[in-house]
Length: 416
Image 1 (cartoon, rainbow, N blue to C red):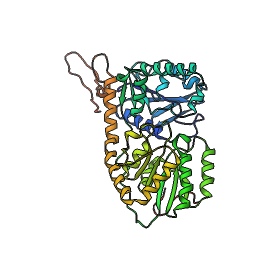
Image 2: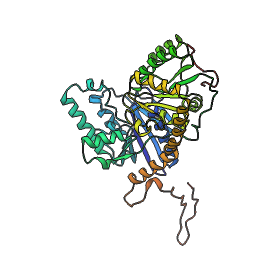
Image 3: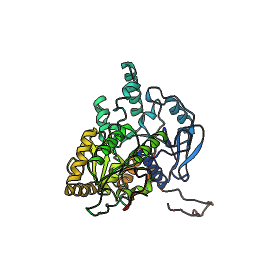
Image 4: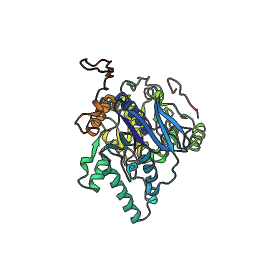
């Protein structure tokens, strides 16, 4: 074993039945993190909620499911304890969501915050009493303080935590999300006489602003015959996808379809405006970064970590998370092609600071810091021990050292 084994605990990379992978920003983050750890020489193993099935995150990296149903106070203590026992032979641990480190964190562990997730209105209904809210905060405190470091993809989480518990700043590492600049290249300049394509590349959930985007599409396709809307994303349930498919099929110049992640670069390069109208539970959105890298004009809200990516009027438009403001922003960009081009060009420049290579470098630096053995040697940077072979008295060592489909001119999907 070159560097040891990293155990990673998440809630759902696959659906609990193991039949369908959840395609979202956090899942892509997990895939890239697994790739990086393997590149560095670690063995990696994941755990999640399920019925006992085993799948793979990437080839050679298993994910094991455990049958857990309870989630009292929006935490998973039973899942935590099963992981603590089953991953005890792992050398290091990563808790892929901060609260998964409650009530007990393994030694030499890191947790990840993908953004504030308690800022949507229904969350208050899940903790209906002050006693429940205090207990939830106590559990989050235990989770945050139990690990060596907490990676936060945005500054909103750090600001909330340090305002709630002054003195906690030393636990956090601000490490924003990434974009593969080699894949997401500058958009195609299409003829000005063509239709203006507006893309919503998000999960079909209310917190991602799908209802506001639907309303904007209904209003603006009636007003402007040169606008078309593309909704590209999965729902947590097939029912949501079916409903949106039926709605899009009944309308002119509205399309709903889904493409796998490797086809998204082509899609971004062939649209004009990208909508990131998140209402809550948002970090430094991968969809936002990908749209920026493609040089498209981005309309985003100021929710969560989006303000870490977009400077209003410079590399995108920041709006309130309402359908009214979304409609106004799209109309503004439709009426001013020069503004679209300027925002897109600046977005591409800003995206260069969030490249995948830089994200990997910063993660490796963090691993060097946390995974430091008792002798002072950096485990993440340690080369593989040589195969020393046999040694006999009076002889030198002998052995070998191993060195370490989307639219082009016509849209793909369901035509209304």
